[in-house]
Image 1 (cartoon, helix red, strand yellow):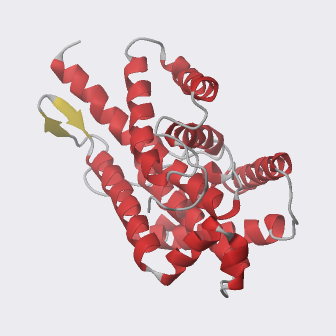
Image 2 (cartoon, one colour):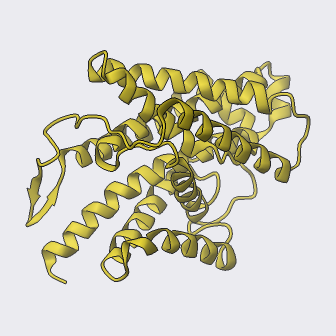
Image 3 (cartoon, helix red, strand yellow):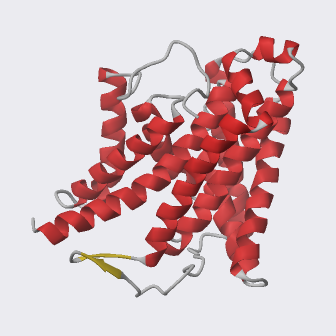
Length: 296
């Protein structure tokens, strides 16, 4: 393998891994606040991309993306209010089944609204054939947008959870929900807001990757599996660790393509997930005895 090929695989792996990291962060936001593993997170990405694609035909790209994120945020709130809020101390298995059911409902709704056709947003800058040369490797300008948006999401969440009143309230709910409620925090609203925040960053990521990967109604399941794998790899609930774990998985996938057929890419992800669950269920970056958004 030449240096140019090695660098090309690295750039591809980091780009894809950053998307997986954002999906994993969506998992962790909800898990930290509620203890729920939301397997509908992948559908939020696709919903945001699909809405943005439809809106971009009648308005400029930026307003279309912002409005798509807003629509997905409302959908995230509706999911929590309709399907989650009324449950009283449900067990983990019940919550998993419910979120899987929600993902199926969202997927079927998108199928009826947008059919099976592949769609894509236009590139934010440049075109499909545009590329930037880096030491002999080539990267699309859209990939830089993906990396930039991923970075903004991570930094923005870091600042949000550290310096805003709502962010601190969410951290309090993660640490001890009963104590947070006694302090006057509206725990139900914090749970709803966690779904809204998770859906919003998912939608933004879905818009960013649409010009590169295109968007289809049934792509959410694959993204959810990748995001869940990254969340487990980094340690469930550790959102900052998910960034490193996402890049690791992206690199593993990129270099696996150089050795195996493309059809085996998803099998590699599942193999990594099973390996981590068997060898180190707490993730590569250690374990914690208590949950909470301490890394933010």
